[in-house]
Image (cartoon, rainbow, N blue to C red):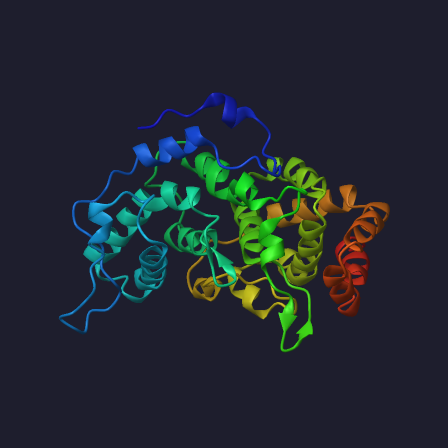
Length: 318
């Protein structure tokens, strides 16, 4: 079993632009999940022509083309629930996801349409680990937080001006008009950390989030706060409510989590709001809006949707 890095484990959990996944933690994840012998197959059993992902056997995860990886993630994410009684297939998908996970995290910045690869990886993770980490090595939870949880902070997802590329890449154009939403990669990552961090780690993490200077990140975070507020204040916060949010906080295939996903700890959501109300003061909010005003494509939609008022009057005042 991999040896836990005690220095990493004792360090406060924070987000910082360009401070991405821990290489040591990625190595531990890979060491604990060797390549399965047989290739995985698609979640389709009604035809003799069922596709098998034989290229996974012949290539390392770093060179497998993005298209079959995305298809596999969708097949595995949906198949593990739809065919839960087919134990052999479920174990195949599970084994391959674990083996591919470190490589998928490292390639999380790859783009497809308006999404990043990290989005379906997070979706699949939530699905495969909705019952917890009992089958994994000690320290696994910390290692995925230090890798998958920090994938949106990797240097390739921040430009030379310190702006979040994840936020820049999600178009706010909706049916011919501009309307705020949150980047799927950012939204999924926020929910990931909110789900798996210890309650005692939430406050420092929130402080690090609020300290990020990117106007694009700040705008998308404000949209996420407005869209997720009902979830954050629920007595039973659940992933199924993400699809119902009035502000778009969805990510690629997040709809598949409506039937099987981990519960978001109420203690964490309460601590998140408590910490947020302490560090995101009205003065800080106004400073954010001034920073965001440099980009009319952000400030005008935020004003139209009254996002700042929602955050000030509901999220921060609550």
